[in-house]
Structure formats: C-alpha cells, structure tokens
Image (tube, rainbow, N blue to C red; front, side, top):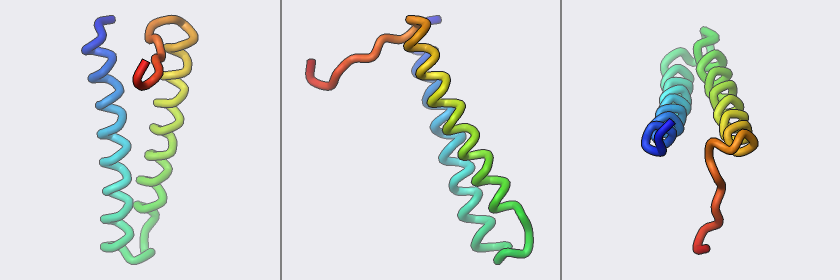
Length: 72
C-alpha cells in the first residue's frame, strides 16, 4: 500500500468522524431530544474513533507504517 493511500485512508476516517460529530450537534439542536438520532450519530463517531485507533496500532505492529517523533 502506498504512503499516499495510507494518508488518504486516515484522512477519510477523520472526515467521517467530524461528519458524525457535526451530525450529532445538528440533531441535538433540531430534534430537541425527541429522537435518538443524536445518540446514534455520536455512537458512530465513537465507533469510528476506536476503529481508527485500532487500525493505526495494528498498522504499526504489522510494520505497515512506522511512527516517528516530531523534530527528529
């Protein structure tokens, strides 16, 4: 897998997380607690965040990506 594809995959996950965060805010303001759309959007955001963290940890463990320090 090329480095640009790995970067795009991580950015896509981050955009999905932000989208669900915004959806949760929107549903919270519009629905005023009448539906569970806010809870569903925030649950998806948490699931995507956990999946992203696990994917990065697995990728480091498998050697697909290599972590580096800032300023090294």
